[in-house]
Amino acid sequence: MSNKSFYITTPIYYPSAKLHIGHAYCTTIADSVARFHRLAGDDVFFLTGSDEHGQKIQQKAEEQGITPIEYVDPIVAGFQHLWEMLNISNDDFIRTTEKRHEKVVQEIFRRIYDKGDIYKGAYTGLYCTPCESYWTELQLDEKGCCPDCHRPVQEVSEEAYFFKISKYADRLLQYIEENPDFIQPVSRRNEMINFIKQGMEDLCISRTSFDWGIPVPIDEKHVIYVWFDALSNYLTPIGYLDDAEKFNKYWPANIHLVGKEIVRFHSIIWPCILMALDLPLPKQVFGHGWLVVDGSKMSKSVGNVVDPVGLIEEFGADAIRYFLLREINLGQDGNFSRDALIQRINADLANDLGNLLHRTLNMVGKFQEGVVLAAEGRSEVDESLIADAMAAVKAFDEDMSGMKISNAIRAVWAFISRANKYIDETAPWALAKDAEKKQELANVMYNLVEALRIISGMVLPYMPSTAEKLWQQLNLPGSIWELRLADMQQWGGTPANMHIGKPQQLFPRIEVR
Image 1 (spheres, rainbow, N blue to C red):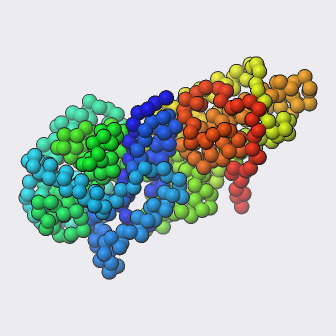
Image 2: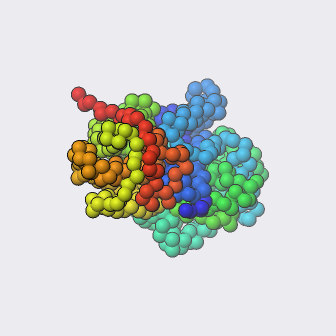
């Protein structure tokens, strides 16, 4: 059993007045990875949070006649409520407006300034307020707009502090080229290499034209640029300034999971900040794709933004989690549609998994008075089932360790289908009619319950509530939260003479009109 530390983060989400399914997607990915590593026995720290400073927030608050913190508080509460609904198991939620974070950001500024890597100058250039991004003329799109969001940029001119990011460009490029897993997927890695090779200018890291931000500690008429502030959040909750033991346990982070549109900040700006602090870089920055809705990118103007809260209330959190993780290959864009969701619920969850559990419990109840009897001896078909179970656990382990989540789920469901086939192969209803086949029947019933024990563990990262219901209906001893991957790598963990629970429907079929 592993006993390693494992630190995974999502980006801290920018307060948007409208929650959408894309927010749920990224955090559900991170949660499934965190839950898998806990299952593997790792000491996991899972961070998410909210990025609350910047000119855009101040402008929106002024439009409503309220303070910026009054504007962001209810939006942040909405994020936190969504995570509760989705059963997100984060260990901390960082808000960049918290004093603990302000202290860290200001100290990072001081240390890099004292090193000589921050200097005061004047900034005249192009700025995209929605993206909080600075651009050069060469980096704009063909219409002269922001290359990320394709909205107009503004020319700004003001006194500012600059971070000597250009000093670290060659070192960073060498690091990326020598560590091919640092930026994933490969397409994102290639984009970042090309970006660096185009030339990197020093980064403007302060503003004076608004005041909603963390003050520059040596010059309080300036506030710190939002990305310099936001990226530092990954150090705050793990004790960067005040708990060396905790910090050394979890840093460097294992995975920064981010949307592909902000890979540049996490794989260029953030590593340069860490180099200036003489800190090791995160082990991996993984850029996931976007969700599109029925073939079109989600957009408020188009009116196709999908509300995750309504979906969860209608279909349940685990069904939404399963669909997002199963349907989309991590790193690629994925399509969300209501029809596809319902099809997955009916085929994979109600038919495959739900029927396997229901049939098994009903047969144990009908044929053995609800008692799982000891297995003695194995037939060829039993050996085949057991071999397939161990192969499924191995694939599940390898694919989850390699961030191939959809592949891992496919391996789990292949085994669920195999267990359903095992029922047809062994025909327990026929065995129950023959008194001389009592032990053979007992073996089949034991193997089905044992298969479901292992399946419970394999679905736990994706559908935690469903995994717990499986465990409880099987009436397995202890808690599923005590289960470890090592317990699933051995056949025979179900105790003999165990009384099963009563079958209850996991996922009712959805009738499509």
